[in-house]
Image (cartoon, rainbow, N blue to C red; front, side, top):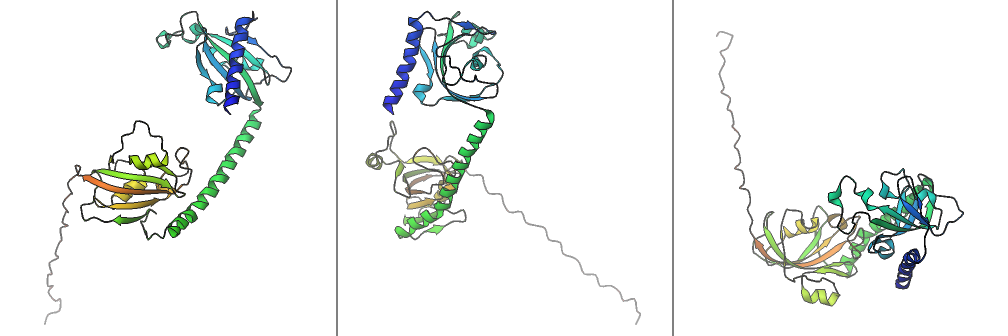
Amino acid sequence: MKNRFFLLVLMAIALFDTAKAQDLTFQQTSKGLLYHIYTPNTGTKIKLNDVITFNVVQKTSKDSVLFSTYKTGNPVKLQVQPSQNIGDLMDVFPLLADKDSALVKVPADSIFKGHEEQRPPFLSKGSSIVFVLKIERIQSLDEAMAERKAAMDKMKAAADLMKAAEVPAMQKYIADKKLVVKTTLSGLKYYVSQPSLKRKPLNGDTVYVNYVGHTLDGNVFDSSIASVAQAAGLQQQGRVYEPLNLVLGTGSVIKGWEEGLLLLNEGSKATFIIPSALAYGERGAGNDIKPYSTLVFDLELVKVKPGHHAPAKPAVKKKTTTKKYVKKKSAVKK
């Protein structure tokens, strides 16, 4: 993979070296774009509404690289539409066919005309922004939409499988570990391994928590404890390893934490088994937490710092009305 990356970079550099070494013949569009097609192919040209995938290197006139898809590894994919401004290159794309390469010069003066205050200092007056393009793929809009739908259907099918597997995986983990857990109405499962008789926190309190977070397969993805993080090979540069402090009820942590910490006493230790619905759900988080992942946290509620709580409103007594009984006179005379 690295060799391929460097090869692509060298190809891009070679294109620029060629531009310098040769006396290139440029043509000009009606908007003033200068372009030179390196490899004019005989295939069908790009049409309006086509979806194209292309690699691009963007440079200044002095060859300073501003952006490169070869470096990011993500080619640009977009739909060709009528040009809105000189810098969108939409006037150049219809001149190219599949696998064509081209060099395009966009006058910086045209881009910043009327709003010079936005011109960066490295784009002086009279300079250009230079693009080297390589068309990798051309699709009709229908083809692109069909491909996107197929990809989304595939992702949904995979997500459905992960969702269906979550509960059995959680149940197996609890059974294998022989855990006796309590379950809240939301689905949070927890057990307290070290009880405490100190106060419980309330929303608005600041809590200090030491923790280790891992997936059901034991992969540690985060910890506030230096020795655990080091043993797990976590890359947490610049982190100070100390209890995490947070204010409960502010939404600064996942729902499973917000709910679970309110159940603990200061000084207690517990394990939370948090279903994805109370964690990162269908999106997951980074490479370590996949979609629909149940998370396990071993934690200690080190300290509770009381916050400011709104005083409870006194109960308002409802007024009761007593109906007076009035003895009615009999209408029948005795």
